[in-house]
Image (cartoon, rainbow, N blue to C red; front, side, top):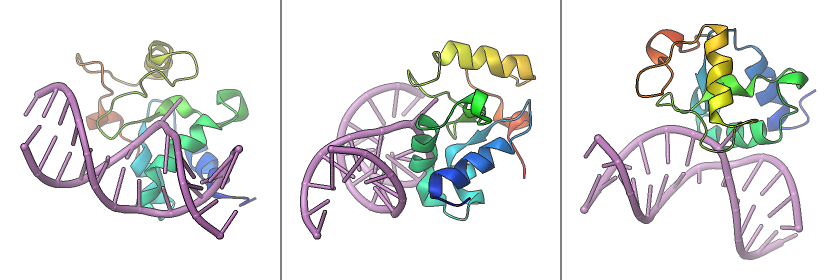
Length: 104
DNA sequence: CTTATGACTATGA
DNA sequence: TTCATAGCCATAA
């Protein structure tokens, strides 16, 4: 399995339950390397997508913001998907990390 | 081998 | 408050 940091990242993102979101740094920290937050995002870019079992739409910024212009179908689609899973959005357009932050 | 890049985060102005 | 810059290190060329 561990063919690289990407595979480990995919496996971690796959463990994010519905109605829950995690920040890049959060996932990287669970992998034991909080400095690789950038690669988590980079791995998502190379990820097989939701169809591949990697719900990259559940991965957001630490502030709860979505990836600007890099989502699979646009940040609006990502928000719609998250809302459909039960994720709460703030009036600012950010995810409610207060209640939807993923806890291992 | 080296250089460039990046879905991040923290810090400073 | 927002905007800009630095540091992080694996992957690609």
